Image (cartoon, rainbow, N blue to C red; front, side, top):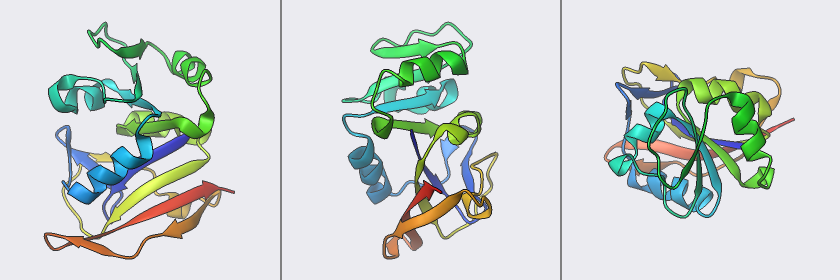
Amino acid sequence: MNVIVAVDNNWGIGCNNELLYSIPDDMQHFKRVTDGKTVIMGLATFKSLPGSKPLKNRTNIILSHEDIDAEGAIVCKSAEQVLAEAAKHNPADVFIIGGQSVYEMFLPHCTRAYITKINACAEADRTFPNVDKKSEWVLKSESETKVHNGLEYRFCEYVKA
């Protein structure tokens, strides 16, 4: 399995159920990487999607302890159910897309991480584990620095050693 996330310098990912930054190129990167694949998310992430609808052209798996109406998505009540659903797909095509507790829960099951690093700091109430401080994660590749509205960012790919 894989993880895909955008983080700031403090590994912040969100605040008040919103992303910290909106960078069109990062959104396109997310779409390119996950298109036609399987995405796994928590309920708050699902509710934050446009119209609270599953992402198009992807198999959407939602981890929720609540009964929810998510037509076109697979709703699982436990991490074990999520892993059983994920096992039905090629692991290289499965992406954890948030939020914080879902990232923390499934990061140990992942072998690749696509991380957009944004050179900024914002108030965040949700974070992602700092893989730079985890010896099992190795930076495999990094794009050149890009800029959007004064925000510098780069696309990084990590692999589990």
